[in-house]
Every structure is written in structure tokens, then in C-alpha cells.
Image 1 (cartoon, rainbow, N blue to C red):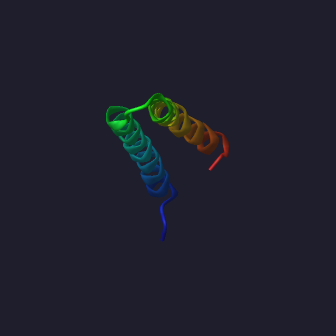
Image 2: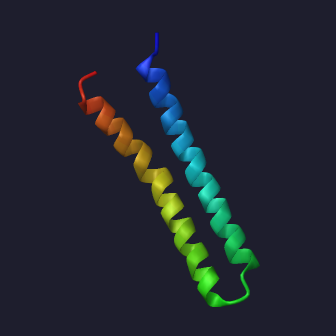
Length: 69
């Protein structure tokens, strides 16, 4: 029997891990870039990854809480 709480916990954890890895990728891109376009791309990746880590788990938790299950 599958427990929905267990699935939800792992979904939140994987979302946070993926966002953290994206932020690390952006920082590496910023550090290794020689010109400014890749650096701008790295900053955009870092900002979007941080947004993902901050907002997506809360949105999922709110959606699951309000679904009535």
C-alpha cells in the first residue's frame, strides 16, 4: 500500500535538491565564464533555482493541504 505522505515528502525533498543543484550549476557557470553573456546566464540560473527552492515546495504543500486528502 502506497502512503501519499511519504510520496509528498520525497517530492518536496527532491524539489529542494534539484533547486540546490541548479544553484550550484549557476555558480560554477559564473566562476568559469570568461565573457559576460555566460555570466548573465549563470546569474539567471542561480536566481531561478533559488526561487524554485523557496516557492515550489510551499506551493506544493499548499496545494496538497487544500485538496482535502
